Image 1 (tube, rainbow, N blue to C red):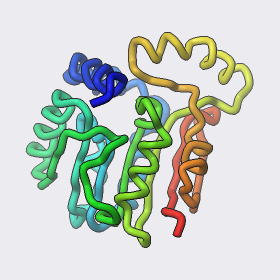
Image 2: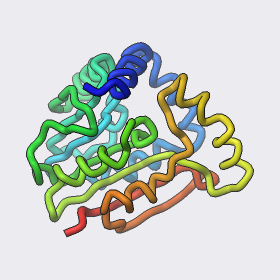
Image 3: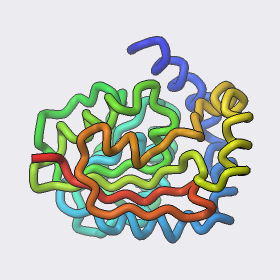
Length: 206
């Protein structure tokens, strides 16, 4: 595992048990409704990249066959516990988003939420998502990024180093641009909450 990825894994291992409490602040932004809108659109054999503590498991359709990948052992432990409580049959695997251990064109849907901000190389991670998606499949993303509201975007820029250091989070990235540069064909894109939250539905370029 590369050094940057190892550092991220160690950070998330340390606060895995408290992660949901930290992320609860996103509830005030209407994030659960956005999660549901994104994740409920998944179908067939599904890979969730950076599954974290498994919060998205509440929103998948019952007929989805789910594989959850994450770089943090401790986050996966919490996700397994959540899946057991929900009685969801989920296969979890320890994996780096930039080097997914799956064969090409395996999944009908690839899902990732609030993750491109943490990847050391987001373009490589998105390209890996494309690789493992069937040509007829889809990639569903829910991300936060740099606000298109001038003052807020500038505030994010000023505090970028602080968030990157403490939370391994680069919160002023541009998710839509990253997706486009990774050769995803954007089917639908929506920005909300001062342009900080991005809901993206895309397809591999054929």
